Amino acid sequence: MRFRRTLVSTFLLGGLMMVFTSCKEQYPPTNLSNHSIIPRPMKVVANHGTFVLKDGATVYYDSGNNELKKTAEYLSGFLKTATGFEVGVEPTTQSPSRGNIFLTGNDSLKESGSYKLEITERLVKISSGHGEGVFYGIQTLRQLFPADIEKTGDETHEKWFLPTGTIVDWPEYEYRGAMLDVARHFFGVETVKRFIDYLAMYKMNVLHLHLSDDQGWRIEIESWPNLAKHGGSTEVGGGPGGFFTKEEYREIVAYASERYITVVPEIDMPGHTNAALSSYPELNCDGKAPELYTGTKVGFSTLCTNKEVVYKFVDDVVGEIAEMTPGPWFHIGGDESHSTAHDDYVRFINRARKIVKSHGKKVIGWDEIAHAAIDGNDVVQFWAKEKNAQLGVTKGAKVIMSPSKHAYMDIKYDSTTVLGLTWAGLTEVDDAYNWDPATLVEGIGKKDIMGVEAPLWSETVEDLKDIEYMVFPRLPGYAEIGWTASEQRSWDEYKVRLGKEKNRFEALGINYYPSPLVPWQEEEDLFIDSAENE
Image 1 (cartoon, rainbow, N blue to C red):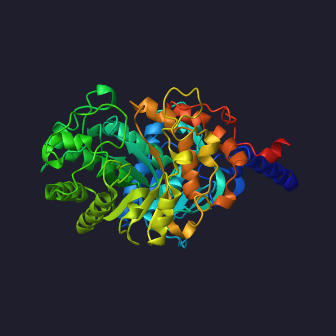
Image 2 (image 1 turned 60 degrees about the vertical axis):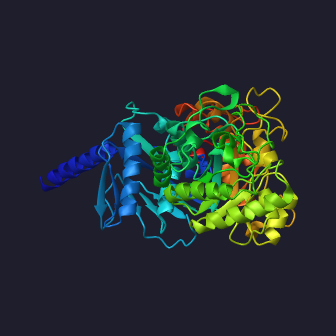
Image 3 (image 1 turned 30 degrees about the vertical axis):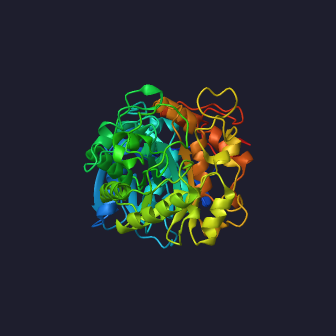
């Protein structure tokens, strides 16, 4: 009898264990290495499990760290909007419980912007000793979710899955930017914010705003109010133009800062100044204001560099903008000033440099400024002439690499592209990606380079859809050039990762150019380990 009772008890216990085991959720093995991540990370190690995000999850952060609290709120807001889940934010002094996300500043990586992303079946953990590093880790995490995460309020998913493993990563260059020309055509605050979102998604950290040109003045200056009122009243083609009030500019700067993006304002001078000259006749040598200009020619305008009022104007403008701009740089343009005599140009740039420095900012200028008395505190932005950039380096200046033949996003993809220009040739997606900043110009190595920037000039670009078409899919490649070491980059490998961004672009509603050079593909079921399918 005792034997029979023992046998029955063993049978019942085994049955209960089988029931318990069968109730535990099982997921196919994953492979983190199969996921498309742009820019390509430094190191990826997969361990083939699955993390499950469910409604009611919490983003935890180090207790007492207000910077991480803001980043946790950013992530929570993103996940709430995307999933419809309730995602809380809580401080903690210990490792959180299962099914949650943990942002922590405890990390031994020393490189600026570095982060470690660890995903286990229990927890997602992003570690960095730098606030921006945690933010960059979030952007990587975002790309590991299915593309549907980019849709607003996608409540069709009861659970969201992530592959387990570890990513360790840091950027190659400190300056990774894009320029938006709001002068030729004006774009409002919401469009600029959307542009900022695109930069942040690919870990870019600089927005260069081209705020003035012959066709328009785009920022309120209280001491010279007619600049915005009159100079901002039109644009290329004769449209209504527009300008940012100081409050709107501050809003853009704050929005960018929350995403670890520094705004670099540019007031182009002494050329590209017709909007200013039309607004104030005293800035002209003959004292007469020219008509507003709505065409696309360059090189015909110049401030009167011999008038002292011009330097009063520069000081006032730089001072008001610098006061609203927490970043370290102020861009003075300096390009294509063909109507300014060489000696006058050099004297003007020398004085403009001193004015910028008097307001606590460092000077950036297009490569022509290398002819002035620049030094190691200045930055030359290479766009056209290699000799100018090389001259800047001999004077100790750092270089931002923006070669027009590779990095200008307003250049047509091919001869059939409706938008864009062709003066720098044609720039297909492979041409945009296939260059190395550190070997492009003889005599300019990595030690001389602060970073890379991809400008978007707006002569032919009129709205957000136009912006998207010229920017995508080139922008992710520029981000990777700035982030990923050149020895880890290959067009043949990159184009496959870029092709996997198709679903993400479409989920975001991006009007992208479907380059025939890219193997565009629908999103795979990446939660099945490729080894399991062989």
